[in-house]
Image (cartoon, rainbow over all chains, first blue to last red; front, top):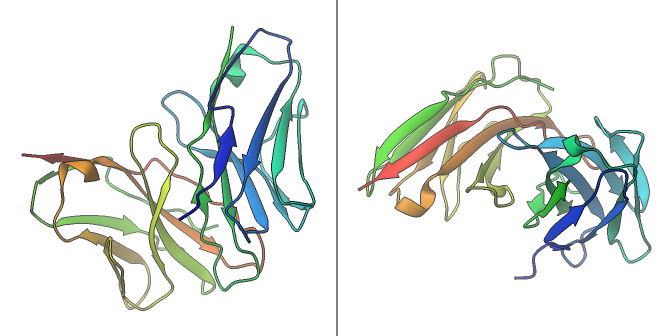
Length: 114
Length: 112
């Protein structure tokens, strides 16, 4: 079965640079979530989109922005990168308007900021 | 969202059943119990979820107490590949895009 695709899988950036992470949800899924997992930490919710509209927002820095496009893929844009942004970034997708929002996660993008 | 409490770690012999408890004493009526697991730095993997009835799928069984204040995830025949951090999460159904709030989870170590 098709899964969530994230690209790139690994990314190395310098401080103050920008990065763009991409997420392609499971076909027919209309809801996308972004999570950040720092070293030795548990995943933390950043932001979610349903039908291309922002649905919920967690502890996402103002330097980060995200959007969902007409084909339901999503991009997380990160500017003025800091060392503390080094983390695994997971995207998950779900089929909205079902009685539960079971989320299916992608393999993640490992971002290293030097 | 309701807070969950899980033991930080558990061991299980391969081939035996692994029973992972979760306490969610402040759960609300519209909150589901979800179980996910994360195998070393991979994306969290959905296992099972339930509202008030016991549930079973090809991966596991979920037993929810009648008062819904606690639950147990059962892996009937644990294998080495089940070694992972298991997260019990309660989350309300809001109609759209309910975030998952991960706690510290239980680190399950399956041994020979």
